[in-house]
Image (cartoon, rainbow, N blue to C red):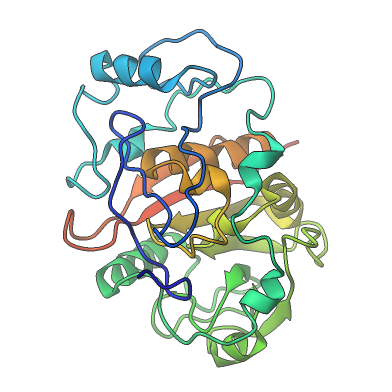
Length: 309
């Protein structure tokens, strides 16, 4: 029996060609099996790397099978060193309106998140190779340690942020749900307890942060556009937001559109948050999965705040 208190991957079920879908645990009622693009107004389709919403799964599958964008090959998360995930957000033509509905952000367990996270969990939610890959990625993209005037927000933080060993800045703020976990996080200079699903308004001044990080928690945001708009507001012009995720989560607390789709869809979903929030440059994706097929996959979707409005 899968534990709701430990993030767990599940066997894949194909709903889109080239996408790994991970259903909820067998002890919970199945969430709707649908893809991120079904049941919406149809849009014109061009095969080459285009984000198309509104087409049924069968048409999408056929299009991907014949498209040069994915080479007509089946894709499993972390299946090969050169990942097609990195191509997903290139040359995207987004629909005019945000394509997801209110029910896409519902969760199987709508009880209080404060209650769910009340007990501290001093565990890691991805395996050691995935953690090492994320830390290595951070070492390349974060401002050098002890850079004057640099401020970082670690959103949805816990007892560890996976920054490089000994990493320090003048200000590193942790925002999370459990005070005991945040107190243990030695990289933080301060912390804030806040449930973003209740109050997505971030308690910071405009243009306050150089970097915002979020590790394996973007899938829990039930008001993602509100949060991403706030991220844009508090980032300094040119500041970077880095969303990283795997195929592990607390299934009862993840949003419906996440649990009913797979890794490639997740990249598109997070990319759409950046796009529709406004104020960001076109988002990019990178697959940093360390050991294809042998450890947890790890993906990053990131963007910078535009220098001009």
